[in-house]
Image 1: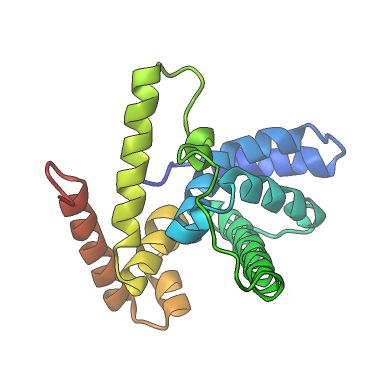
Image 2: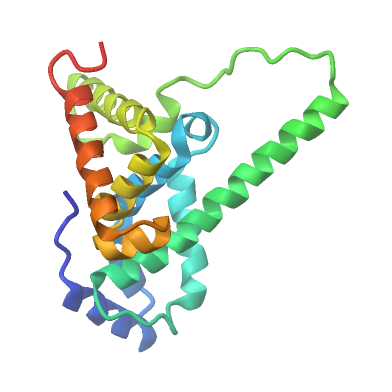
Length: 209
């Protein structure tokens, strides 16, 4: 479920920032970090998650958003987070384009060179999701839960995944999400419901086996 943020606190922090309190932005972004991080992880997908540090995308998007904080207009919590999500989408697209361009360049320069196994640990992209206060056993359990959730979301159809992301993670209404997906609100609601059922089956006992 999406956290129930206090929009008045967001407006207050925006006001402090615009009045010259640059430290207010730290508190503002701290309120949205976990939610933005989840959106990044879901939007990256399996292939890009192995190549891009999700925390870097969040931080890059937050830095880019600084240029618009003085002028952003928002009437509710959803408006502000949707604005952040647009910046996040642009940063992910830029990183994906960069990776694809680098792969094309590498292929031209080393046409006979094989792609050996990555030296990065499989836990590398996930390390930022684990709180330092967790015990070693808890960290392993947390990583396994994240892996299962992300694998289950990756297995959804494209429309189900996008509808679920827009409504349950980004906080759009069915009307807003349907407009973006070019679907009716009822069709969007059905996609979300089916996605939730599919996730429940995958994440339940014995799911995905």
